[in-house]
Amino acid sequence: MPAVAAPARFYSDKPSPEAKASSLIDALPGNSLVSKTTWVTLGAGLTAFTVSNELYVANDETVILAGFLIFATLVGRSVVQPYQDWANSTIDKIAGILNEARAGHTKAVQNRIDQVSQKSDVVDVTKGLYAIAKETIQAEKDAYELKQRTAIAAEVKQVLDSWVRYEAQQREAEQNLLTETVIRKVTESLADDKVQKQILESAVADVEKLVKDKKI
Image (cartoon, rainbow, N blue to C red; front, side, top):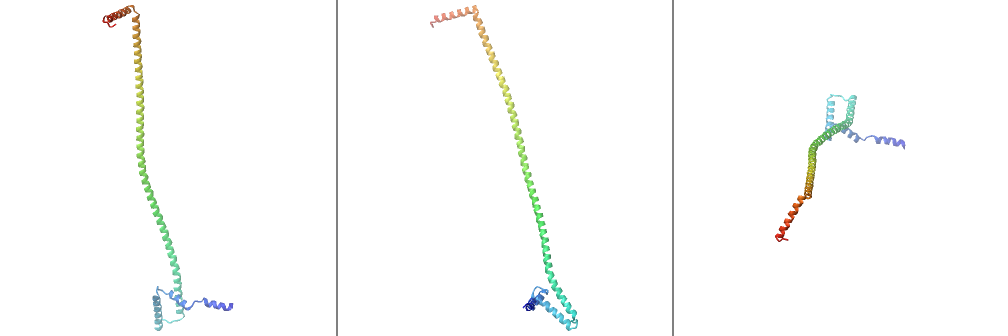
């Protein structure tokens, strides 16, 4: 059984004539079946023309050349597609790198623009803070001046109050001295006999006048 199965597997692995024909047709240049058929017809016509007119005699070299051309065509088609894939992948890779670089540059420019915008905002904020600082300094200056004026006014009031108190004390002292002087003089006058006599005579005269006027 193994001896029989091996030849069967060998014949089963060999491509069929239809597959060979399809591979040969695919190896021909052109995108459609009509164009590929045109190339086959043109090649067959040229071969028949050259052979019939004895322009070229088919020999072993012709067979080798034809085989080489077919092999070269097959190899070319088998190599072109991987090369195209490699070239496309390389182009895509380079394009991706360029796109990433462009995106990075765009992002850097945008970040710079944002930073400049933030700095412009900082300038406005700084101007506002400077204006507020000036107003604060002016307010502190006004408050200090008002405090100084209040302190001076309080000191002046204190001085005036002290002068008022001093004058009041002086007037009170003068009044006390005047009162004491008057009392002392009256007392001294009352101690004098002549004054006492005059006071007595004056009092008697007043009483007599009241009796005379019938007021008593």
